[in-house]
Length: 92
Image (cartoon, rainbow, N blue to C red; front, side, top):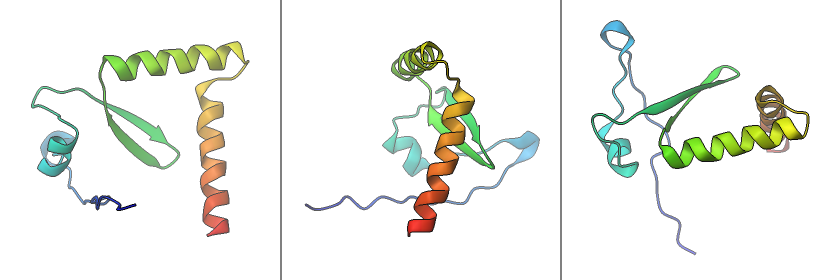
């Protein structure tokens, strides 16, 4: 199976008033227009930027509702993800 080569790393600098420019290649790949909304999520010492649209919001709300039903909250998920990253790094 041929894998699509994707650029997974790009360096950007914060500009005036903390503005961040998302490189054009990412904007095109994710169909982000000039007025698009993005979601910023701090996960440990990382910042995740993801497109924010109705589909994403629906999935996020359903996930949060299921977590609450299970007696968990989003912080539990973040902690589990951090632990998983450490375990993966240790195995590699």
